[in-house]
Image 1 (cartoon, rainbow, N blue to C red):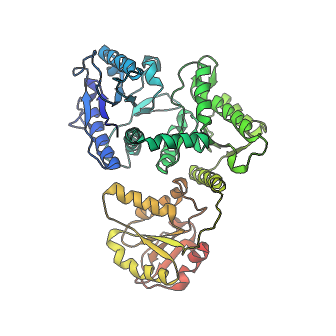
Image 2 (image 1 turned 120 degrees about the vertical axis):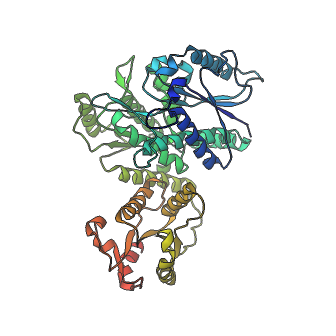
Image 3 (image 1 turned 135 degrees about the horizontal axis):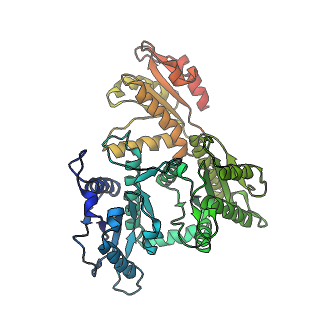
Amino acid sequence: MVDYQIILLYANLDDKPDSHSSRGWVSIFLKNLERLLDRLSGEKHSIIKLSEYDLDPDSFPLKSSIIIPVFSNNFLQAPIFMSYLSVLEKEATKKSKSSADIKFINVFKNRIPIEEIPHYLKQNKFYNFFEIDSLTDFVTEILYQDDPNKDHEYWMKIFDIAADIKNIIESNSSPVKEAEKLVKNLRPSGIYIAQSGIDQYNQRDNLCRELSRSQYDVYELDSIEGSYDDVVKQINEKLSKCQLSIHLVGEDSGALIKDRGLSIVEIENQLASEHSSQVNDKPGVKYYERFNRIIWISEDHENLTIKQKIFIDNLKKDLVNIQYAEVMDCPIETLKGFIVGKINENKRGREQVITPEVEKGKSIYLICDKTEREECKPISNFLKEQGFNVILSNFDGEILQIRDKHLKNLKECDGTLIYHGRNNENWVKSKLFDSVKALGLGRSKDKNPTAVIVDSNKKVDLDLYFNKDNLILLKNQKVNKSSFKSFLNQLD
């Protein structure tokens, strides 16, 4: 395995404590990144932190390195950073035996002119820790607030960077990885996530994240810098590795390619359309070998520009351009379920199963609080007597491990039961949401029948459950077979 060192480059002024914290932005970012990286990889990692006062512009790493520059206005005002990055670029592109393997992951603390970034770095992955209002163009930094409900986007971006680092390290661990890459190129199975306008950035990031965590190969355009021809070449190379492209279309038309005046959203859609025709119109192509496109159109149309309205109208009317494409205007969670269904449909066709699997007893995931496992035992015993495999909530391990097991159970079970005991309704809501969300996390089964078990003496807000048939009322945890009838019928 290649032994990588991880180096964080930052401007000293970006790590000054403010009135809200005793530590600076960079120090908090570094600690959180190390924490998640250690949990993901199962190993201890120390990230080297270098400001402009720690650098020697004529030096470069003597061993393989992952460089994380934290770009900001302060970063650009320190000329030594550009000199150092220039040295690293030259070293990274060398082919001599003494050259260390150097990878880059770009972090943007705030918005800066893209032309200020060294050309070489524009081709690498980047993460924006700021948000832009699509109407006012107002920029807001994404800050760590020690509250998962408020800084969800912050933590998701930290998780993605940690996952990128882990993947870089593991991709160079053995020759087997290279062989796997060759097989993927011979049989395209990736998913291409097209760029989007500002208003769909978060939806797009979440979609990339969820598909990547579900072990799908996700491809996206690294950079829209350069000429039109350069961008087209990048897109076509990535499309050739994929079986599906996904396009999120919202109110904003997306960034423009300077030398053509076309938005990247339009260009990617057109190239994906041409690629699908090239692949799908070949004689004898099977349904599971086709290249599919999914075009999702946001339901929010209040602030559409005239240009974007024309583009969306043309998408819906142009039968040639949307051939082999599914145009959808549904909730985002429905879209995720559809994507997974499309992937699994192709996967089943590719695998050409010769002998069917022996039918096993269907599984039910029984979700409960740690303090309520004993109360759930009569329910578990009843379901086992009916021939079902029961999976109870597992609380062994650290928080992230528990969460991973929870999501894995939701992906693999045939149905879900949520025990509503002493927990409040917000807890129940979050578990109901997880059940729906499972369709977008790699769940192979078409649906996930879900019901809530509640003590009949407990006051219940019926509006919370939408459908009263999804409620199972018990009295003192005594199982009544008729109460489970509707839920069990859904499993059949």
